[in-house]
Image (cartoon, rainbow, N blue to C red; front, top):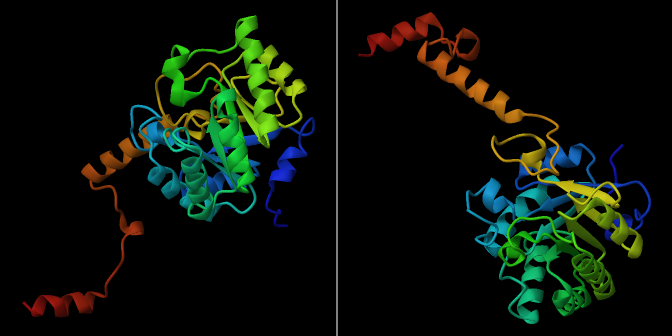
Length: 280
């Protein structure tokens, strides 16, 4: 039986209910796999800059990048809610530009909602986008687009003062109209506390089990890359090892003329081949 398309209200209704599952996807095949697995939210994250496009950071990602990849994801997804990151510079220069860019993501990219990083100072922008009829998911804690201002990619909210500010940020984002909030890289106890303090779902990434849902970058979850892996990532597979092994085997079989074999080749009648040779 085909599952119905999830809506913003469906996600809101999951507050204090069954935890929400979310994963990133950046193209058609991965988005289809995520959707077929029954994941609730597909996030077209600006992390695509680093894991797909080879940029050094998320700041380099453009609106054109996000719309291009959102289109591919939206074509694959039938069930999950599709949320797209607004890239750096697309919403923090003026409210009118933020509305225009958010509109493009929904109209051209066919996303269901946008995600905005920031603190309480982004509340007016969020409110304006929501009033324009565009659902917004907030993102507080470690905000990768402005990580340099936070002292790098570090856990946020470890002191009482910082924690209080994050609680206030979450409340203000809720009041501005966000339907949910991503909490990234904060202590588990703080993630649980914020989740209890606000009436909209929290989606944690390195924010502990007390949130209303969890999100991970699919490349991290599947072990598609070797090297550094954040503490909050659990690798449910190590696909990179299998991929390299398969590619190496392909190289070997090509060099030894093992592949393609007769099983992977087409045939031609012997008489026709004879006719061909007489044509020369």
